[in-house]
Image 1 (cartoon, helix red, strand yellow):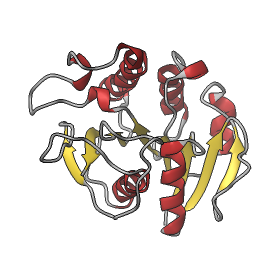
Image 2 (cartoon, rainbow, N blue to C red):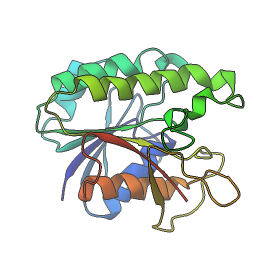
Image 3 (cartoon, rainbow, N blue to C red):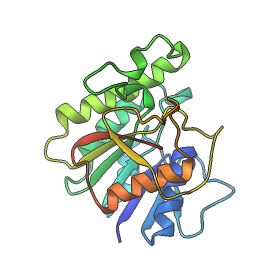
Image 4 (cartoon, one colour):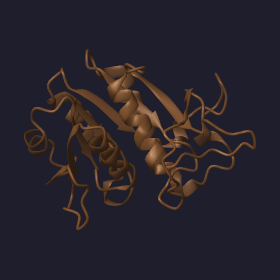
Length: 213
């Protein structure tokens, strides 16, 4: 069993990752700005953020994997990319780093354009998407010998459509996963399944991948 820290562990993506990891018997530390009123039994909760990387590293000392599920929105917009870069530099090289990105950086077809570059991509989501893409570019160009992975959820991933756990999903590589009708969706619980599957059985060492149904 792994020792896993999830930064942003009380958010939508993070809480589903924490729940799945605990259910499989992993030791899990959920890191967030504030302690939640409702907690997942079996997880340890600590207060910290990417805005205090030295303190954060001290809080999660001894973990095997760190997953950032922090979205670059609200007061964190403009700070997540820098925080993850600092975190990657500060952690022991033996610690694997996973990053939850957005759908915007996914390709719409093999070798094609990114979702963010399509006419229908809403301007209001572009700052968050561009920062997430910047994090991926940093990992691709400067992570050195560290083992990392970066996961793009489906386009319809979010708290507005939580869904249920089926234990199944499709891996699209670099390409946004869509169904026969062109819809792109994955439930919160199954996104957690995909992340913990990658931790337990790494298939994307130092690369990004997309997930959906």
